[in-house]
Length: 315
Image (cartoon, rainbow, N blue to C red; front, side, top):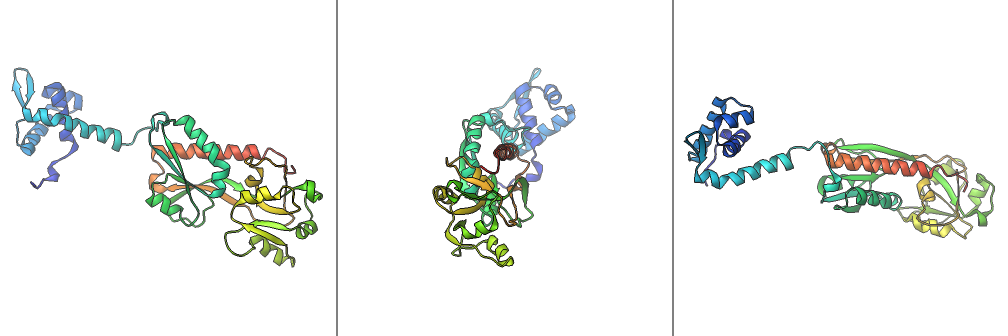
């Protein structure tokens, strides 16, 4: 294969060729390219040397393309189209014309609560696109973004590396959740009733404890945990009709995915809030598609949270 002198090749040569092929005139091509005629003629000279072909020959007032020029013209136009349409950044992302895939990393919590609204909105705005939800957590979200073509991740993320950009969505708080038609306690629930009531917890390990137990230990008291699971919807379903309670994230308790009559109220001890965030790779954060998707998801989630919080806590 002939070794190319890449230093002698630039995009201006292709632009010059395309303009000469379209207009058949050095002066017209120069006007179209906003170049002086000497510059256009010089680019043509470089093209002839590079391709070892005259490319264009003067016949009267027109520059007629050679057979070689006719052969390569469609390929030059294809290269320019790829560069302008696929490589150069577009001013905006048009979801109605998008036929690709939105890949979103979500925690189990975020997928259950916000997934339906996100999917519906994407279907409405980008009807020809596909949507993929991927399991995401603090441990794997960077790998999803870096290596698995994931656009954004939603969840609770701590100590992210410098190549990740975080966007705050909302602050989540903990509420006591129970069926007060069975428990029959005053509201908000007193500490004595809280400690005396068997509890269910969300846990990712073999221990039936959480940060709540550390707080209780500092007060010199303990609670009675009788069930642990990683699935918050399991707890939500099991609370109905039972004399049990759970400390759950507020949005889990307010979710309408399950139709029940559970009561929500503040816990009788201090439990720290936590932030729900959306993360993207910094190097991709200005990509039109990512900007559009991030804006849509942020607005949807914040609106859903605000509407949920309009409901009275004691319900």
